Length: 242
Image (cartoon, rainbow, N blue to C red; front, side):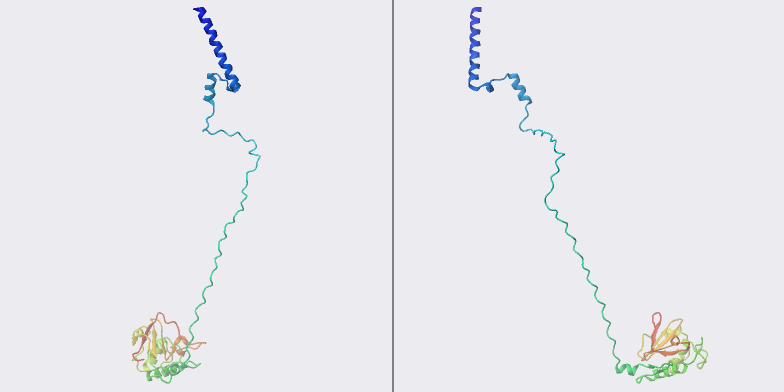
């Protein structure tokens, strides 16, 4: 049996060497089979195709300047200027009424000495009030004057108004400014309007004022004037029909 084994082993070796030589002749050295263990290890540690490969470090990255944006910068739009419109001009005042024939015939004329001339169309009561006011216009101011008696050497505001109203038959006895707040009826009159409060009283007759405060340049007493005054705080009264 040993004799038979030795020739068989030799035959197998010859056959193996012949196959290896044939493969070498056809494919060259690159096609020679590597040991199985080496092929398995190479496959195990080889990088996969689908895995990202680590890029090699770039030593010149810090030295190269960063790529600049060559597109021109677009400036921000400037805000539109707000144009302020000029304020509208103030409304023109209404034109003053021209004097008419009615003003000339219904308004008294005041003279520089403080007396007044009654208008042409003034009723008798208005004429009597103006004439009585002219009589005492030269009298000095006197506190309480005209309340003890009609004919006095001086008059205060309520005493002089009471004197003029009594001359027209519109008052029976002198009244102070407080009681005169209830004289006649409320509201303005066409010819005569009384303005009274607890401390002062005056009246407007035919468009002119009769008042102790109308005195100027050291002159005292009630007198007529074209200047009107503030009416707030006064009771406004008139006589019916006047």
